[in-house]
Image (cartoon, rainbow, N blue to C red; front, side, top):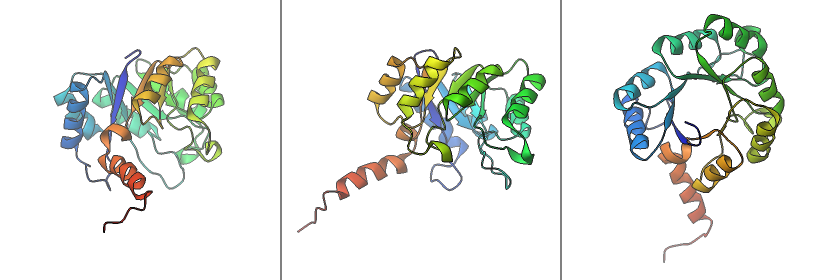
Length: 224
C-alpha cells in the first residue's frame, strides 16, 4: 500500500447506504478505480467486502460506550472480533482519552500486543504526542484520522500535524481525515505519508451532495 490510495468504505446505521452489500459494491468500485486497500467498519461489512475484492483491509468496529468518547475499536472485545474475522490491519482510537471501563491507552495497547502479537495494528491519533506514544508501544502504522476531531485539536491544521508527525517518528504514517480532493491526497504523499485514506469524498454521496448544494446556495440565485 506504500504511496497508494486506501478507500474507506463505511456507512453508519442512520445513513442511506448502510448495508454490507452496498459497502461491498462500494469497495469493488473503489478497486476498479485504482484503490490499493480498503478501510471498513464491522465484521459483517468486512466479510462482504472480502467476497468482492482481494485487497488489504484495515478493519475497525465503531461502537459507543456510555463511559467513554472513544468509538473506533474501543475495547478488546472489538479487537477479538476483527482478529477472528481476519484483517490485514486492525485500527483503533489511540488518542489520550480514557477508554471504556476506565482503561488508559497504554493499558489497552499493551493488552493488544500481548494477546495478538502477530496482528498488524494501526493507531488513529490526533497529535504528535499521541503518535510518539503509539510508536513507543510498537504499532505498525500511525494514522492522522482524528486530527481536529478530539476536543483538544479543534481547528488544528491536518497537514501541519501530518508533517510534524512524519518528522517526529519512524513508524509509517498514513494520512487520513479531511482529505477531500485529489490535490490534497497528492500533497499528503509529497509530505512523506506512507499512504492516504480517503472516505467521505468518495463513498458518502450525501456528504458530497451537501458540498455542492451549499456552494450553489451561496449564490442566492432565484428562479424567475
